[in-house]
View 1 (tube, one colour):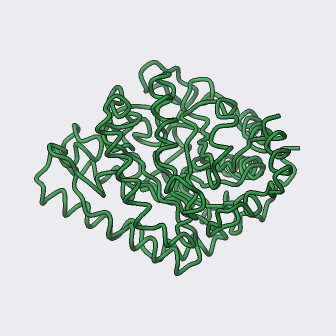
View 2: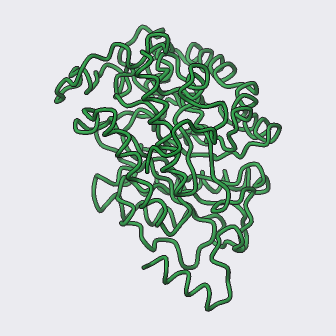
View 3: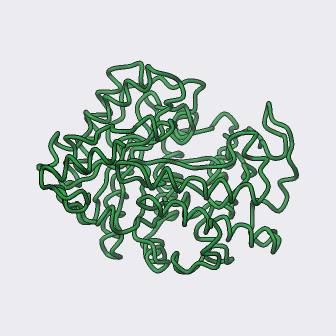
Length: 414
């Protein structure tokens, strides 16, 4: 009904209801063309499960995130490792391969510390050079780049991928941290706003922990409005990609619709981070993937599934954090074993034909479902030892098609 009312009000005003012809003119026709992309996870924000060797090589089990990576090591030692990683993990060859795979978007996670490190913060900086490289490489290969602020001061979710693993995030309780984050977004907008043809989207904050309650949600909603580019759609062609903060999409009905152009919603859909979901059989995984299509189709903003995966277990080493186990095999505290992780993650040469066939079906079911909205961006392009999560490995071993529109199971959600 909210969408209908919006369409009617636009019609009365003589304005087209198609987002791509509103006053904002980003470098991609959101709403009419489908976003098909991949995340560059673990490059400019370390994640132990994506590059476990970087953490193992420290010889210190207390190093569990990028904060402790700088805190518990000699600066020059840590800097050398990071510079080598930045130079080698993602190169222009990867952008070329991403484009050759028929994708049109790349999402680039970056931490606030790339822009401003505060007193007493042990982060090592130097990532901005690689943000610039990514923009150039995206332009060279006709890819659209989404710059995603993956970590905020104080952490917005306490996940290791925010830069600082902690039991409870503190970003939302510290106005100074919120203000710092807003300033960083202003910096990013000023850096890339004129390059909207290549960088059409800025995501001001990844996965704020809305499940922590109303205080977090009230701060997040204000932050989304404060970080809206230039305060006026007529002054910017940059799309703001806000995250659903782990709330049902219905929570956001009507939010930032009237008076805003160029706002899109990011939702992340995984099926392994609860005991119930990780216990699904193959058909249940596919059924749930297909079930998301209707809510995506009915949402009143452009909506992108900005993270998802053909992986169906949490078996990848340290996926739940360094030193923590998995729900699937019962090694994570509080979980009950579903089965063995053998042959479910690691090197794809250990995957059975049946498992790879399921991954192809599951991948296609998600693509079909998520294209009921504005499209999708898979997590992640590559991983050292978790091929079930890797787009690159999926292309190599056949559960991801060489062109994302080349479906073997086009009716799987019917």
